[in-house]
Image (cartoon, rainbow, N blue to C red; front, side, top):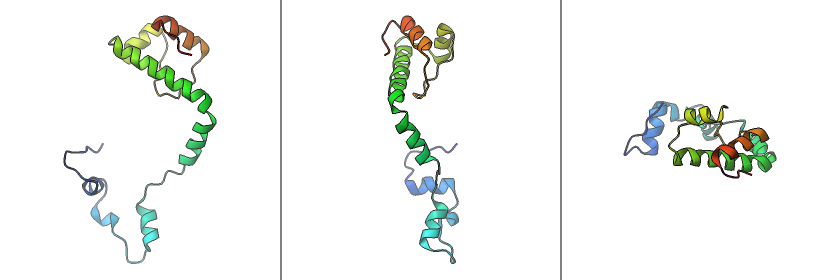
Length: 116
């Protein structure tokens, strides 16, 4: 994993990832071809964004539940493992976990708060 050091600007950061020669335009390529070669393209970004939009109705609640759990853990000095021992199930704090009603109710009883 690349470590970002104090005083490192964008140019230094990029050179730490790839050699400087990698960013130079080759004689036989156009500027557009060069940009296409060096740019990072995630072909799944649109698909992921559409999925998030379609599932926003429950993702918002999933995030609120995860944030409430995280806040409870911090207030009570619990790490994830200790909290999972307390609840007897694996807790996903990603904010996109599809919580079962039984999990939500159990969490509400343990944490003594209303989640939904």
